[in-house]
Length: 155
Image 1 (cartoon, rainbow, N blue to C red):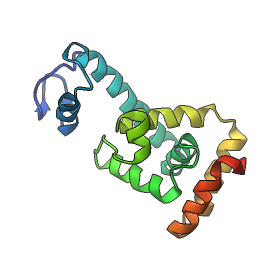
Image 2 (image 1 turned 30 degrees about the vertical axis):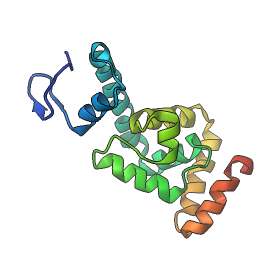
Image 3 (image 1 turned 135 degrees about the vertical axis):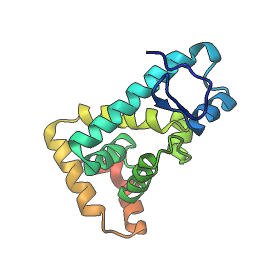
């Protein structure tokens, strides 16, 4: 199945909904034309990885993965908002971390964070979930303070 398509709307031949992300990537010059089909397949694999992880493990686990993958840069609230933005179909993230490390590619950032989370042992994953649940109700200032201390908290 080929994902190469110049349409920016639903394309029945490739069964993939093309949205503004395709245009954005082409405009920013991030994907040379000859690599577009290769990139599209990798991109779709990334989306499948993310969606499968969320379906099997739940939103809280994805939020924990975002917090751990960012070494605490994401607060629980920031991760919740970013995940909600992903679920609305926005594949470009304009947060500082995504811009600096992933060229605003939310899919690449999420796949990285899922890999980091899966690399943790089961006990650490449980502690990360406890951290997310414990910090969820804190106000933004307290979450940011914990975020600053996260790399040295030894969760």
